[in-house]
Image (cartoon, rainbow, N blue to C red):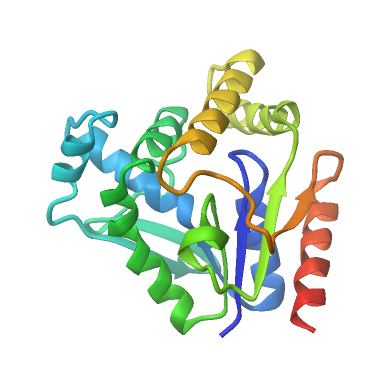
Amino acid sequence: MINVAIDGPAGAGKSTIAKAAAKELGFIYVDTGALYRTVALNAIQKGADVKNENEVKASLEGVKIELKHENDAQKVYLDGEDVSSKIRTPEISMGASDVSKYPYVREFLLSLQRNIAKSNNVIMDGRDIATVVLPNADVKIFLFASPEKRAERRYKELIEKGENVTFDEVLDDVNKRDYQDSHREIAPLKPCNESVMADTSEMSLEESVKYIMDIIKEKMN
């Protein structure tokens, strides 16, 4: 099996780029961020405080989270309900950053992620794929872009969805998320020594996908 690990900060375009590359290569795409978002959604729906590890842990008792691939798209199920769109809000995004700090949550999701990679050719993206989840991945990429460029992309996305936000609010969220993700004690966001550093700040989506595809193909040869 060929495993590709793509790490990087929030809003770097990891999911969109990884998804396109996986489709091109015929690999399965695994968005691990969606799993953490689902844990956050579950906690919030149950009235748990995402900043309280014990409450989040208690909210996961008996919970079933599944990743399914339907019509070339990844769907996330929480206890049988498709929550793929419910997890894409700024509140859930910040909640995901909170719950991802907890060792229990990371352990809870680790075997699910590794089992998918064990039996499939995958491109998996997240914050600690190359460093923790798939340390033996065949290809490791750290994908990033400037905070301003990432905020700009996210802002456009939210406006198109009809969200009432300002650019400054989105940039503030991006900076907060970066700080949280890179300063957490458990599996902080950082490139590993073998990661290829890929800066897509000045690239279009098409250019970014081609750039990542070229890195993968070169490493696989």
